[in-house]
Image (cartoon, one colour):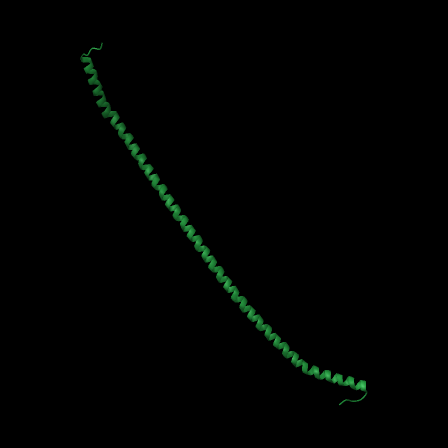
Length: 142
């Protein structure tokens, strides 16, 4: 059987004293170091999550700006194309009008030339016809 004598009390006192010193000198500072490390790790994790969220937000903003710029560029391109088409139509209509006017002027000039040439040619044809008739009939026609 185990006997209880004063050595047990000395061992208990020694254990408690050792526990007190170890707790003060080793365990408490070690726990503080571990807690500080966990706090820093949690802080870094929080900061990392914050930076990731900021990156996502900025990426969405950039993508949104790119989409707006593309849409704006597309609308500007479409406006320029429409303006070019209107200008082309205007120039074509103007050119067709000018061509029609030049063609009409040329027709009128040709008609005038035909009429001017018709008079002398008709007189000459009449004179030739008269000469032929006189030769055929053998007498002068009048």
